[in-house]
Length: 426
Image (cartoon, helix red, strand yellow):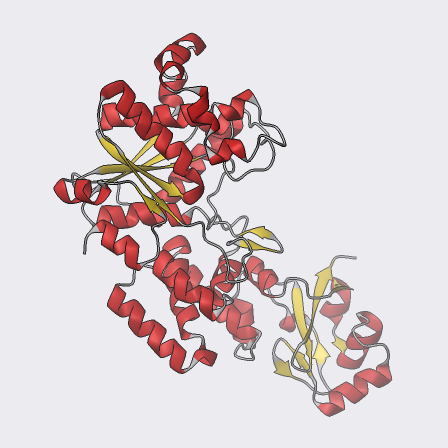
């Protein structure tokens, strides 16, 4: 299956310029995707373009990831209702380095004539004087042409600065530079990038007489129309500092059936036959969420590694009664806190735990989890209280042997009510 056919069955083509498929069939073609380093981590919205590069490389073509050190200093108006804040050069350099490290997880930069490359447009823009830019680039594209772009037209009522207005020229020059220095003949991106990409193909045509191509994928949304990759906590990031592997895994696990049938085509490397089989099996028993589990496993391993995936699976089972005390005690502190994010947290002095405290006093006077000793006795008699996933009775003495990560005790009342007791120094 060729590259365009691969993207087509996966639902990853929105627009494609005439002749693109023929060019890809004719020879090994170099193609690029641009990423502006506005943060020091990619988020899962970036994964669409990265997967396009991945499939391109698997089809025998050469991928280039352009980290926009120069364009990141301007800000792309596409899809934006207001001006972006400009980052300092120091912030941009830091972000570039972090993004490069993440891209190493997806593309092969070592083997073959089609090994991936990372380039930075700051390298060729930093010595470009304003007058030279006007002569070499601005001269070749009319204001009328630039005004006709959707990214500009949508901003005319609210206002657009000259800086953002000229963004398409800078991106167009990137394409021209890569066309001339890397024989790059295809630029890819999200559907909101079509105007910027075709500015590049037009600049190449007018300056060199050469032919270059454009391909965009649909902007990914959820079935309800809301933005893909957003949660109440914000973006789902690839960096574990911002989105823990547990929460990353949970994001995919909690996708709707309808969304997952689209996402598994876009974000996994399963073949068409494998994908069709997984979807058919899932439709027969959707309550098992086998499709979500397959996607979550595939993408979590590729982003965070197998060990983090296995830890996330173990942690996920805890809330559904599959965890044990041993499982809890094996969890790293950050994972433990991620699993029980938002659970009420109470404090108890370390001296109390070292000396040992009866479970009735522990639940009532010491932590306030239950309002009174009488309520604690009734709950214990009903068998509704568990400590670290073990059901307990009124004879239990809570002491340091119950500590998780030497710091926490997990209390559960019934199936759904959790509390974390944190041990603090007096």
